[in-house]
Length: 416
Image (cartoon, rainbow, N blue to C red; front, side):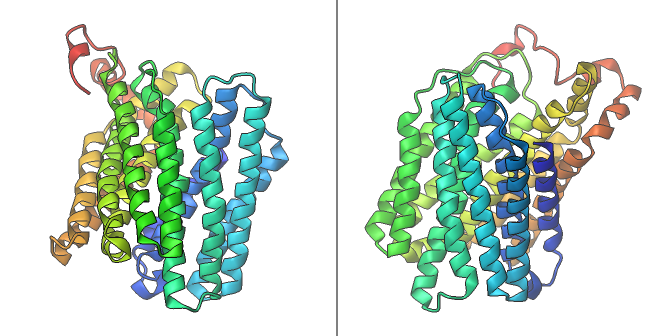
């Protein structure tokens, strides 16, 4: 898990640094987008999904050779696709896509093994969502390999496959995985009991939305795409209801910055889902017009922010340490939290406004700077968290435990 998350942080760091390359080298936003989604988010999911699936099912870990083979295949695939696209080597892009798909097939085997051999069957919904997400990335990866190989010469076919590829990878692969993980991760970061939530209908709506959207785009059938947008919106409403139930659960602890990042990502998930449903009902032209805001809301606002929030909690909790040292590390990660949260989301908001055509280019550039600044603070803390706890030794005891101490009886009634 730590190896996968280290590689994921490296890919996200490279995604941020790639923005400083000339536009013709990074191919507009393609290279940062690829490094963030296929590199950072996907590598993190490969590590987390197998850990969460084995933990929730109380199964033995998969064989080490399988895990390390999966690790090598996914990272080699991401690197090969990036190099192949930048250098216009179609064969290398195809090889990278196949490598990525092979890693996904191994992950599918790990998840299936966890469910069939597990002795705990109390959490079927996240496991089913993980399985569906892996199926999406296998198909989406094959679409991506076809796109990058240069074999698709017809412009209309290329655009249709591109839209389907983006839908399967962003919504089906990363999006559905995040939705399945929030069921347990959000209550854990808020330190509350996981509320009862019958989310089978919401899960089926999300899955149906991805399938209908991808099929409608690939076959150029606007009715299917419109139905998919509405189905995805219905599933998103179910996820938001689950989040609402978590927030309404009585808490004895303040919300840490990791939980606030997760909630910020959920807000962008809601905004993006409404925009996606509206754009899908307007056909391919409507989705093309929404494409920039689709990437801003779902990739930056939701996926990257959720990744940052998860790191700020999971990384310190997984590092072997004494409980006091682990708690001190979690407290240290709170410093600068509000600045990074507000700055990052303000930047994403400006970029979304510019993408909708309501702002100037200067506003869009300011949004990029703010998002890089806020995300950079969180990413730097995710890298340096083992060293931060020592900085608290010179601070007053009360301030050190401001967030990670129980709330008073009156404070327990306050909203998150």
